[in-house]
Image (cartoon, rainbow, N blue to C red; front, side):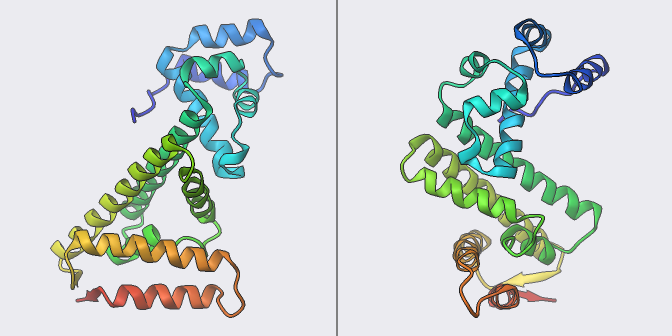
Length: 229
């Protein structure tokens, strides 16, 4: 997916003013959409969709709701996306891309170990600030069972997740931080499989399986693969 273009100072000032105004009428909406380029209009709609999906879930991400939040006409959304499925799939993929980029940026900023980054990348359900990503991922998975467009997006997102894990593992091994008793490619797939299952059990809120059990099983699983030096 293309990265969003950098706003010019004039455009930023214009958008800020628009965000403080009452909902658009037809003339104001035409003014905004004529001011922005095609890619910027599309990205603006997509970012709005991601915001709704993250806070309320993919099911809340209707075309009407996005148009309302983006202060855009429904027709504008249909011009940029062929269907609601395409919009949901792209919004999900963008949210995953942003989450993985944020993980990498936070890792650099906070100078955490690769082992810590593995935990961040795998086990999120018990952290309040990342629980939304876990729930969004589960919702996309369910949708993918009966929506081919979402299936393709979910497949691509899983591959992105796998690639990120491989990168973290390779960095940890090359830096001498730890060793791994399997190939990084195989280990990354095992990690994803275990993470899916563990998050699923935790979200069921089964008696006797709470946050402490979640953390204990996550740590035990990683210790079976990773040996800290």
